[in-house]
Image (cartoon, rainbow, N blue to C red; front, side, top):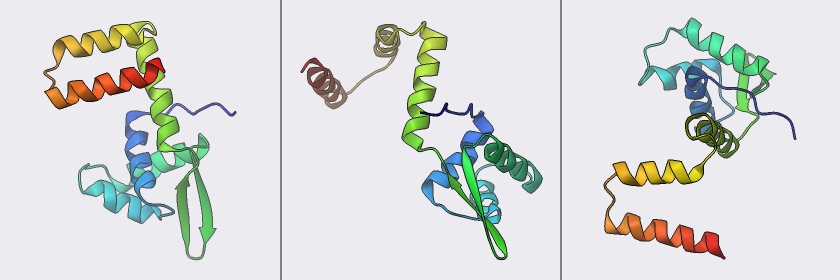
Length: 124
């Protein structure tokens, strides 16, 4: 299995657009990001180029456009990012993450039941 590329927060925004809809052109990526981020088109083109160089997205030339698609899935990226976060912040301890989260968050009865179900499934 090839190593997952390190994706910056800004690059992550481009990836989210591609995960929602692809293949798409750079213009479509710019349009989608323009709705909630005020980056210049040049900045977005730079992010796209970085992702191509990192082998996170692929580009196909179709006259007259280039079409971009993710080469890695959103689930794969989330798993890697989650493991990296847990390792960096909690020294790899999922127990510390969950206990800190549960201490600080207010959970509804429904959310607590859902967590119990997940833990019961994990026991099996």
